[in-house]
Image (cartoon, rainbow, N blue to C red; front, side):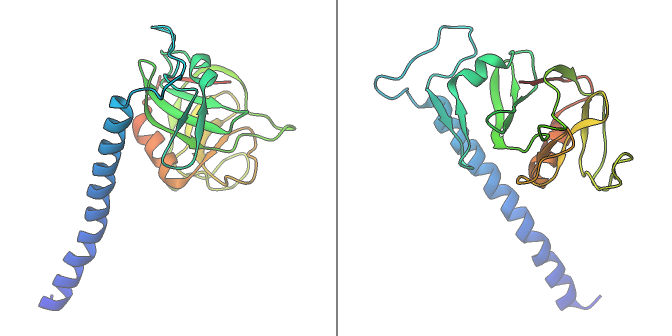
Length: 186
């Protein structure tokens, strides 16, 4: 392989690596800032053990705002939470948010996303195609009967009962939600 081609390939690989390192540093810094920031003056402080937020709303880096009551609706035992009314989802551990909240698109009124407590049954990879609809549903994480899953999809078009996520979020959920993890949809 000529030297210039090898150098170009190494440089090409360095760009994604730098982006990953930068994103990791930003996420770590923003998590520390949120974790150590004191509540604004006059903000409601939740009762210990309620899983509530120390603020009426929690902003995220993507413009999503978590309603104060939403965290209370999602049991601390749940690994993934989906607030259908607010079109938000997040991952948590012991009631503490570890990822998100992020925007999502649930099922339409005529094909709604089921509400309740579920468990991850199985997961599919980046090239998985729905056996029901013949459409790609990358990084699907199946959690409810009838093939209901978190997966990559449009954030402006309702799903057929699933929960649409961005590609990056679908991949993250697929990597971080193990089979058996509890999913709360409300």
